Amino acid sequence: MKTIQLCADDFGQDPLINEAVLRLFYQQRLSATSVLIDGSHVSSSVFALQNAHNDGLEVGLHFNLTLSFPRATQQNIKPLFQWIVLSQLGLINSIEIEQAFELQLSKFEDTFGFMPDYIDGHQHVHQFPKIGQIILGEVLKRYSSRSLPWIRNTLRPHNSRNIPQVSKAFVLEVLGGRSFFSLLKTYKLLSNNGFLGVYGFNTVNEAAYRELMLAWLMNAKSNTLIMCHPALETVNNDPIGSQRPIEFSYFSSDAFQEDLNLHHLTIAKMKTSVEQ
Image 1 (cartoon, helix red, strand yellow):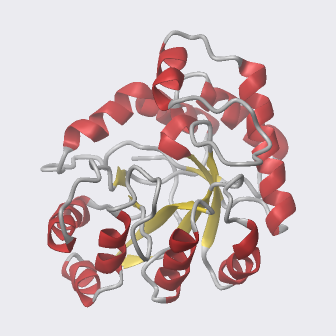
Image 2 (cartoon, one colour):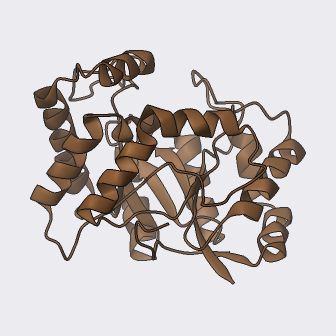
């Protein structure tokens, strides 16, 4: 039996997302959730998430540079394409990123009363050139070697094959995933053993999403991380809002447990290193 991680992103964006995450965790269908700490609906779920964390849910910081929230503390929100261009051209403002990351880390710790179990990024900005270096440097400076958070990388599992919509996964690797993984190895930071769950948020129903998941599960190694984005119902004003209930329906179904059993997989906390 291999252990994998299933992480729900975007906690705090909407109550429908928060409730889906908590329900799936208590169904033993999730191992982690990533928090948009400036999200408009974090404060209403602090107590519930603290309880879930005490019960074993890993809670991470979903470092955000692209999604704007009312009354958010930071002012450097930009569209994803701008961050891609700036990072690829080496035009990242280091002080701006340092301040944003420190601010979000501090707010996370002040809100929940514990450090994040791991770090990742909304739309994977945490791994972009220069941004990734700044984040890892701050993590190493801020936390002791005995209590470092693990860090999400976005490389596909070694020797993976027949990955659906693989071009999207390839783009992540080219935009910084490969170089970021090398940094993780250099710094000997804990990370996932392969990353899956990348697709165009374009499945028409639960059966279609299940087809994608079956291919991902077939390629999963021990401590591979699969990303997901569930919600109880369609989330308004969200580009992927209509996909979220499709994911939730599948993950809460008997079919998902059958698919895990078929591939001899179980869901649990991260227990791996950066070696692949």
